[in-house]
Length: 430
Image 1 (cartoon, one colour):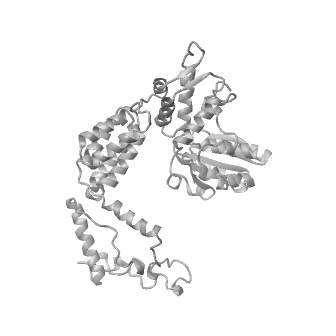
Image 2 (cartoon, rainbow, N blue to C red):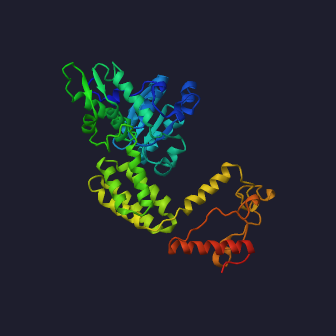
Image 3 (cartoon, rainbow, N blue to C red):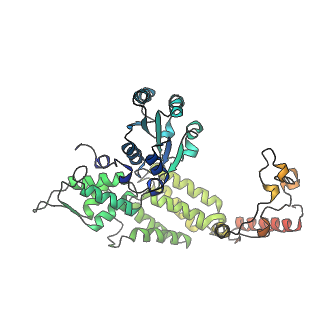
């Protein structure tokens, strides 16, 4: 037990011990109801690393007292699956956590399917990939898919404190103190990855000599060494990190490439590739948008390249993306358009979908008038014909207000205005 990593030792034994994920395991939520009723079904849990996929699977097994086995779809063989299947045949039910399920090959899949059908194996697949894109439909159709969300700072602190105080599985046998800045940096530097945070905490404790009073003192410097990420600043309020991100976006939005590079460098120095890449993606579409779609595409490619390379090489494509986004023409017209549409829907300002747009791919649809009188645009010159698309109560509504901040957006604006005018007049598109 002592040789096992802290993150492994602190793995929850019951649903009640799981940190975060209350949308799944909270009172009255889907997985909590499954466990309570002992009516488990196979499922796929997907989300970022270290957010609790394995913990949820382990907790389900602990709460139901079913046998629990763990395999990896990429590295474990069909023979390993056969062993689990034999155990399930003997014991009745086995919960199988299959990590990296998106890498499950056809041979293993074909072996698993009948065992999922008869319920002897309750499969809990874990993946960081989008299962709707990466997992075979045959497996998907036999499982429920649940998204495991990133842990909040509060969730992380709860888990860290629990590990510090637990005398049996955690670090409670040590006399230690950890200051507020060190704990906050442990949370921020690991970016919601609880496994990394707990492993960093354990390294900090076990590699630090006690003081004369026999107390292990963990400060910011020790945590920085243990997780190999420096704090952005010693801001006692813990909001400097978010100030840098905010300053980065506002500098790019204001077309100041030099300031943007400065704030990006702070994030790079802190090792925050995940946060930096995520923010740059948001900036690309929120602040540049339709003014320069080609520039957005180039920036996204550069960001993806940086993620594949990792630091230190990632700094090069990141610099390309940052400069491109900063000097590019800007337009927020797309985000303003979708926000306006969302506002209408949120306020209930919707209306009935026109009958000719409704689904007609079923028997009896024609009797209801669904799909009748729909004009297929590709059958007409210019692949366009005037017809109503918005509900009656929203007829003529304009959500997109193009700004014409670049030659391309100006061209979009002109095309959009021509289409709206033709629609109003019922004319053919010139």
